[in-house]
Length: 69
Image (tube, rainbow, N blue to C red):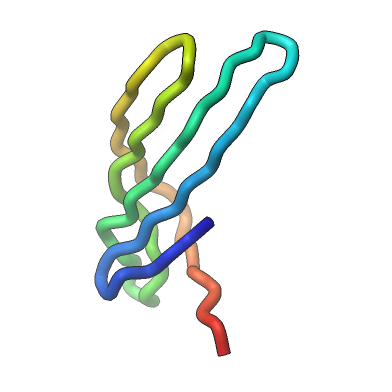
């Protein structure tokens, strides 16, 4: 699930590993845009049922949110 909020964007990804029975969630929060306007960097909040919480900073390639017509 992805959503743009003006100058910011967010996404949510839920996962489950059936072998290790580990469930997780990742929520990147896009805070910066590239020159061409796509989201490119921000913070990542994560949680797993085994390792608990994590926070990270990411810088990546440009990412565009699909806008509904």
